[in-house]
Image (cartoon, rainbow, N blue to C red):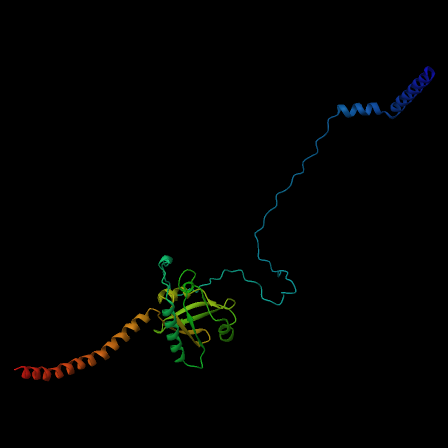
Length: 263
């Protein structure tokens, strides 16, 4: 054991001496000392020149477009007002708590009267009857039209439709072809004519973009009933009066007869 340890120590010393000789030959110790004492040099900062911004000029090169939309017109991102700019009107928002709801009898009366008006119009021009609901005359003021009528007679693109009342006043409205209804401008027509729930409106298409409009009021039913009762009273009253007179004239001889008998 002692001899093996001695041999190991001798081998280790020999290797250390050999390593020291090699380090001297390669001058590694001086290089290590030089690296410790020398301070690292800072790299120079590269100065960046500021870019001069030139004013933007409209490009003459046409923008790149897909071949699928090359033959179509370029899109327009300009805002388009839905409601046409007509004569200025100021409307107050209706009180939704004070809505008028028509009875079934009044609603039926207005629809029947509208049917009579429609039957008297020119048959070669199309027309339809539209009963008014709360959504048509309060709140959103949106009027949906019959789909089949729109597809058959009205334009297939958005258009300005004129509503002409019985007095000849014209109201421009925005017709939305995809939704088949009147949007912008219908509110003004409804408020100006004081339309309420239960009224019926006859739309008569006199031109491709013009409706002649006839309004039948649901509350006119009471006026008609009162007028009919007055007419009945006027017809019956003369008969009653003549009957009373005949009774009175017939009673006079009988009274005289009883007086003579009693005397």
